[in-house]
Length: 466
Image (tube, rainbow, N blue to C red; front, side, top):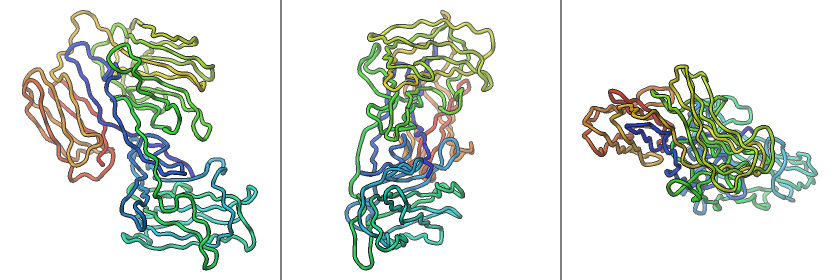
């Protein structure tokens, strides 16, 4: 089963300065904290990266205190992300839990709402000495939709007299094995799984009633996308909030780490959208800075593919124009300051900031106090000095704190992933701090954009409606 990564898109401080605009959160003082729960004894879609909780702990249980709900949603790239849990590696078909009893049926209780031709999946595989001896992929289509707890039993087709040594178990909210007809909004809720041999119960599967959950706190820097979208099972994480700072209370540390599946996760930070290179998005610029500076430390454990690097990339109409940066091949135990001149003779409209910890596990890169420098007296004449949207994620209302220099009309629009305006309002700002609200009651949960537009300013951020 292919696992899908969802990039959680957070509401962030959109710091816009009236003079000498800076990359938002350039000193890494503002962080979002996410409290995530993952299913104990399984790898699940909440382990794969920061997302919108495609797997949830539910108090609506058939027995005990909790059940598990898996749900498919649409991400910022307009792809369906599947809620799942598994106790094995589907790429190499290894792993699982020890199990040594003959089983002829897997049973349990479910609720489901599967959309159109999609199928929720329950995967049960028994192996002996590495060979599959029973089980299968069981599908819940739209014909099995129910809002009431409903019992199911499926045969394992395990030959009589054969004893397994391994159990592989998993479930998904959409047909992620065949990767066909996957639909956002498909969900399945499971509880109280059990095995039978004839009329006799056998040993229960791990965490069969989904009572056991692991909780952890994940910090991610406001206004940046990071490698936390790929994996949050490593220790340390690929992105860390650290108090070893040169400006303010916090700095950021990027780590190259190995995850549970022995994949190398590179610490990546960008004010654009992390994807194919060069990354999309970035910061709109009307005045080209004359230089950029930052403070850094680096630990070099080795070299593979590329070195730790910090870079500022300028683009025009989505195409890269020029890049200014530094790579590092020697460890620095104390913070070093970098002043890098920028010389551009071509028109640009976007500044993309990126940093990498390098391709070798054990590499680390600390960053703080990233600053853009401008000619003396430069001003962009911007009225809005600061904008903040909260809470994170939003429920039925999105609140804004907007600081303006002078009174001005402002338009706030909420758009879906296809760019369609789903709600909009016009406000009259007064000078100073403004408190504004947009109602979200009529919106289904998912990823949206909010756009703030004035006479001279226009900026957009992404957020999640839960």
